[in-house]
Image (tube, rainbow, N blue to C red; front, side, top):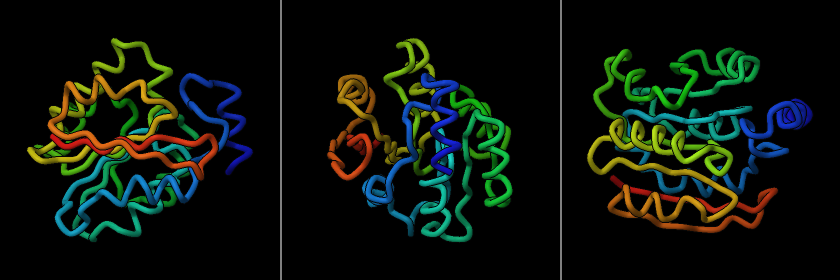
Length: 180
């Protein structure tokens, strides 16, 4: 898994964003904010090798609808084999349209592993606009980044933004927990 991930990074560092998959420490920090009892729908953006997906699958209730976004064809294929009960989509920019196609009027939580620092501002805006429109009132957006670059944008969009730091990840990461 790590070798495959590193190879993907070398081929496309702007799309993959890291040389290694996220740590269990980061996954725990990301998902500790999720109210699993009241989460009926969850989206993961940029699932990669499935580090967060494994935790989501284990913690979500059976009736919770899971939607996974992964652009890399090989990574998505592997995820589909491991998690056939999830819905799969390719491009985070189309989240609102994809949810409409799945007859989902809003999601409770969006988890993001997307490397926003590698995206131009226009792409960030399109993705974040779709995320906000897709969240139910009171819904959560939880993302990790390797810098505080997204803080101003997230504070402009969400009513609540909390930032925490996870030193036990390579590289160390910031976790943004935002509420609509």
